[in-house]
Amino acid sequence: MASTLLRSEKEIFINAPWGKIAALTWGDHSNPPIILCHGKMDTSSGFRPLVSLLPPSFFYVSVDLPGNGHSDHFPPEGRFTVVDFVPTIHYVQEHFKWKKFAYIGHSLGVIIGKYFNIAYPGCISRMVELDPVPAHESWSVDNFGHWYHIFYGDYYNSERYKKQTAKVDTAPKYTYEKAKDLMMNTRSLTEEAAKHVLERALTPVGDGLYRFTYDQRLKEIPRMPWTPEFLKELYTSVETPTFTVLAKSIVEMGAYHFTPFLFNEAEWPNKNYRYIN
Image 1 (cartoon, helix red, strand yellow):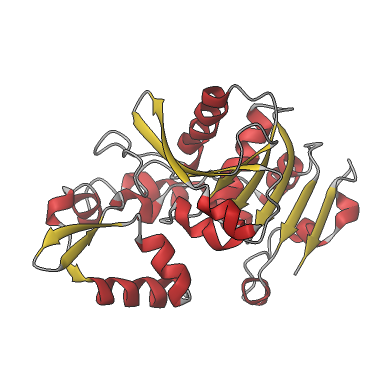
Image 2: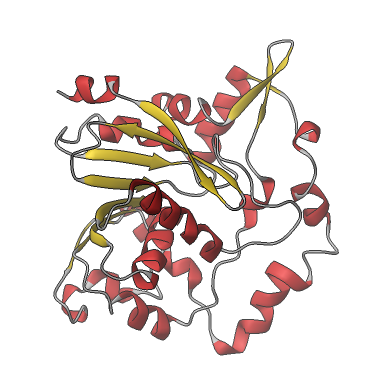
């Protein structure tokens, strides 16, 4: 049945004010819907191996976030934050005219889903969070100035700004094998996973060479400077049933040091949270 589901794959494009949102779909559109949202500098096709293991009784829509895959970039040169990606989910929901849908997010896609869920309560029926990155948002009042200078004050007068806003035709060229090696080594992906992501992340430029099509500004997406206390109150306030899968190696690195509530289901007052390492 899984192979039948993958054979139903289609690419769609959804209109948004800044351009087109690209997505891959699997299954019958009359089935209950699930949106899949990838992480930083990833693509919708990266979910294909997971979808092959999921039941065919749902309709899956895997989104290319703006600046990723086949989706248009945000307007050039300006800065954008994690919150700017939230309308992407809204426009997908509006396109299909869904009242409710389930949501599977990976990494950055988890945060986007959480913000959408808070901004549009009642739309997400349940959430699955794969390797979330909430700890990376934990700041304090004392270091707000540091947050500002990292993402804004020092950004516009730096080489980072020049590099990240350069046109795509100035990006380095690679052979496919080199691009695959870079993807596997920098992202710790298997060869199969790298091939799925590269399918929508590369464009040929002649002579057997390719360029990555990512919006380079994605390398440093400003996340909101929430304190750990506010983050806990914000995340545990929702009523949506939530299942979180935490990567053991990331946990051991201390990435969730400032968000211990992720390991204590009792701290979620609505009794709607489960997790596994």
